[in-house]
Image (cartoon, rainbow, N blue to C red; front, side, top):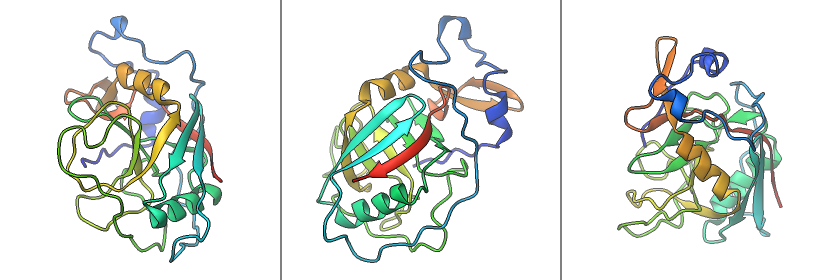
Length: 225
């Protein structure tokens, strides 16, 4: 999946330089979202589990500035669930920003890199294997799916993941590890506001629908249980 590289300064400029195309006709924020206070930060170290937990958590909750996103965890991806739950309970995702939104062709909000540079993964972790891959075909990542992002090669999972807010077709290359049971409507609204990209210090609507979310989404706290 395409990576979006952003600089930390863009966060300070986001509300100063509004997207320039028909901005007066489109909202830039959601009423249900509070101002995001998270900023890009260094990656924290969390010990990597080497085998799946004997007792898997049932849900993972993202407490965000736009409300709760609750994910029902899929036991068909035991190592992924173990790793992501370990990161969540180890505060790896706390006070981090979701760095990517796509609004054309594929429809996802991507999170899980506290550096906001789209290439961060947990320090000293080995990338781990794919699990629970879907079949190829239309809508193989339906709305509500939670899956791992990877750098376009197999068995290269780390901490980045994406939340599918509208039925999407992708190559069958991304581990599905959960389903959104709360917060999907809010993510859909964030998708409707759109994505931006930067031209110098000017923010514009991303012409290909792939960029940073205009409505910033910050994970305040993540917990798995």
